[in-house]
Length: 331
Ligand code: SF4
Image (cartoon, rainbow, N blue to C red; front, side, top):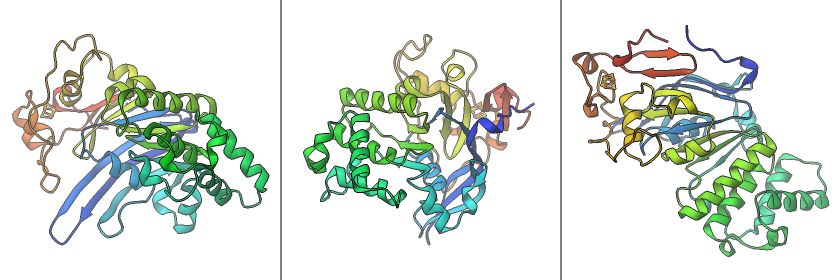
């Protein structure tokens, strides 16, 4: 019996999302039937290697795919029960940066270098609160900067006057300026050095606890997942191959061979990870995916059936995985 969430708890429900990038020369199958839910106040970690389709999934939910090449072929993304895939431009503008905000890897792609950080935060507040007074805006800018650990006096400074970690805090402040219900963070600390990474993650964690914001945390870093996620979805070649509560994914129980490989390639995350063993090979060419299991070309446990048949999901409580080793009763 497939696990069903209590729908009242679910903020975002993505079902069977399929996305391609199409040019005159080729068609890239970027997201192939992805489904997951994010519960209110909870953080889902979307984990996988570069090129797995994580960012495309996030951009599709925001309906921000490049218009010339990106195409959503099917599926739905219900936010508070309403399918974003059916929204018109007006509804999309209302939801972006208001109910859903996004933080990208490189803070400079989100900041305007010729505007003070205070003005940038104020602009976001004013866009979403037309009748708010100047004094109230200024007060809220100061409050938000304090919230992310920046002194309000710095609101009149420009982005180049901030360090990398501080810039990312500013970006988070802008994202939170309208108190979104969902924050999508795409590798928010990858461009930062390790100490600053830890500080920014602490800011994100504290904010989530204080504001109750739900989060989609996109990362390739299992350490980040362990620190801040409640649930995990492991993505490979455009598919979610395993998902479940963080305790299940980090437990030594049976896992999809790709998830097991991910843990074997990082130190000290699970007690049975004795030595580092990178997964051999590369992700399959997304213009020509294998007909059976997409991990088969790299899987040391592959069987004959794996090259022929795409594995169905096996579900046990809130934990699910797609691999022929575990039956695949369908879900
Ligand atoms: Fe490996 Fe087969 Fe499982 Fe794919 S379905 S992960 S190839 S054992």
